[in-house]
Every structure is written in C-alpha cells, then in structure tokens.
Length: 237
Image 1 (tube, rainbow, N blue to C red):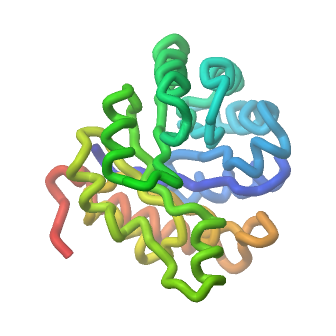
Image 2 (cartoon, rainbow, N blue to C red; image 1 turned 120 degrees about the horizontal axis):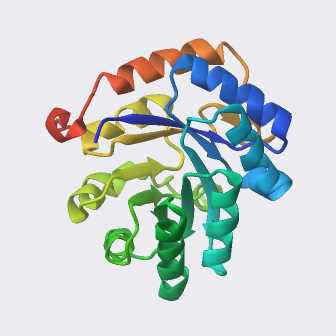
C-alpha cells in the first residue's frame, strides 16, 4: 500500500474543522479524520460538512464504537464517511456488525486496539473479525496518567513492528508520537501516517495549533509520500 497522510481534526466546531481541513488538503494531506471531539460536538453534521466541502477525499469517522455498531456505522456512512472506527475492547458481536455495515454501505472498518492488555493479540482479533485496518493506539489519558504517576510514557512504536508483522492488513500508529516519529512509521511497515494532537492540534484546548502549520504539513507530506509503496521501501531501524 502506498503511504497515506491522515490529519485528525480533533477540534470542537465545524468552521475550525473546515479551515484546518482546507489547509491540510492544500499541503498534500490524503485523508481527513472527523476526530472524536468533533463528532461529540457536532455529530453527523461535522461529517456532512466535510463531505460537502471535499467530495472526493476519504473521511474517517473516529467513532470509537463500543456498542450499537451497525447503526453508528450506517449513520456515518450516510453522512459521507468512507471509514469508521470500532474498538477491539467492544464485544466481538459489535465488531462483527460494524464489519457487516461496512459491507452493506461500502465503507471500510478500522479496528482500534486502545486499552487492550495484549496489543498484538488484539490486532490479530480485529483482522480475524473482518476489519480492514488496525489502529495501534496508546491513549491520551493513559499516557498522561502514567507520566503523572512518575512512569515512563509508553509509545505505539514499542510494539509497532510486532503488530505489523502479526497481521496482513494495513496498520497505523497513534498516540503521543512526535512529528519525526509519526513520519517514520512507514519504516516500521505502517503506511498510514496520522497527524493530530499534539502534532497539529493543541491537545489541551482541542483547537488548531499555531505557527506556519501549512508549510510544516507540506514538508511532512512530501517526506511521507516519498516512501511510496512501503511493501518495498521498508527498512530496519
């Protein structure tokens, strides 16, 4: 799979989401993500607004579905999402019905292993249950809690290579990565590079970060796209 740059629109209102998305698309970003804060704040309207503005761009709805999976996937598909996110910690039946909804409505399903006691086994289960992608995810609260308790912040890079090697579907790594780390995830075999809090979104205020963000994103996109097909470009670290 060719490398993809996805921006997570973890903001809380539609105007800011659209402004950030426009800037991101100008910079070369491939996929837009209606982040969980945007979906909580604006619901289906946030996804609809992105679809109206960007008719040909893949849109990930980060629902973090735990129950009622078929209906949630249906609603987001009808709003214009091309991808939905279901949690591995949900009941297997929930994952199954989200996968079925994906087939029914022609959208892809991304399975998120956040909170799993065995991340590798969780990734395998997501694939076995029919997910199209694995999100290998160390959570925002988890990272902060561990650091506040005096521990060392975990990173999705710690097990990323093992996750990639355990499944036959594309993987993305999310959670506390620096820009440099996120850009290098294709070197671990993960073709989907996600940029969000704290890379381009202020994680405390949940608004777009300051600075010349468009130039930064353009440089990131150029470097990530240069990997091409990571099936042949993967290197060892």
